[in-house]
Length: 466
Image (cartoon, rainbow, N blue to C red; front, side, top):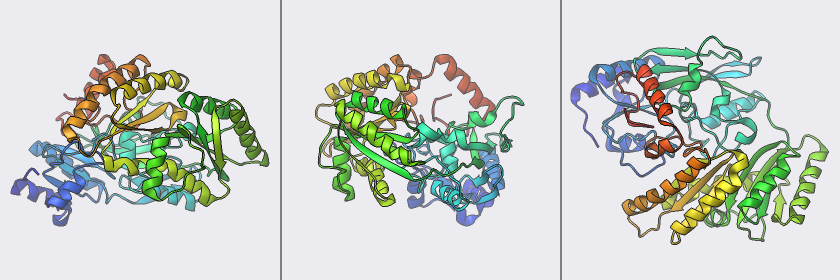
């Protein structure tokens, strides 16, 4: 860890309180990293502000002393966007965790950046409403971090990304200014929407300290259907069949190897005895008695076409939750193998050909590695995970995977897709940004960064270098 000078530590304590400026090794490790394990965390200190004013005080101190700040939320990111590995000061927003100003007419609520996603979901449920952005880390991820990464998750096919639910936000810029953006307005065409620039900027433009979040009506009587599917091309045919006839809440897929890992390590049951190369998980509302009938008729159609081998539909809320765990527990399960992750996407219509090319490259390049496929394929996003063999040194593993990633990203570029569909760029994807963004786009991003953060103190080195 990088030591901090006594005078800077004293100044930090003056900003947030003596017991809220941490320098012990355990705190530096805990707050200095996210779910990635590629970079060694080496912050100089951790500050835990309890108010917006304290965040502003920290930024002014950083300006005065030319200190680098790394905003930190729930630290569940998968791109090293919240990793502090160069002596930065981590600004952990855990204490900004209040939910206030619920507006039942506008269906909005104000959240501090440190509000846990599941906390907002539970609050919405108490009001008879619904916050639909959901993912496996909802029990620990924070709203500020979700906004910084424009988090997606399992409901995107129906409800969109985080940016679709941010009605307003407050940002402390790299100059220490507090911007109150959009203020919950539904219609606001008075100039540029700076709110949308901030969403997905990974803390490089400033620190999100508060957000006004939109809520909606809760879904009714959800059912979950898991299907065993013959191959990736068949997964897309199943999607097309169901989406053409029903409004789906979610459409996920995962591979047989992913299922094996989850069943073995999470104490879950296989959905049915039949084994398939891939599995599709569909969620839909049963608004009328005809909805289940329609779902079963489509299942029969997919069986007749040879796309589907077997299937099961939930008969209770508990069974639906158990089926969801088969998909949602994958990331946690495979984390013990320190997987090399690729979070890629293209337009939905191009997914079958796109995946066929990616799979051919990956299968050829990694004959001795275990490959885990899963993703939100209904929105064009898939996750490719290469598991590290226990005996292989991390440096060699990363080097081998990095070589193949370039081949994969060349395919992404040809399909006009994204090298980071929902995890962000951070440190892990920085070298590959040009596969998804043109030189002109990157240059404009860099100019925007300089306007919001003229001294370059906000999460430096993430997304791109200046």
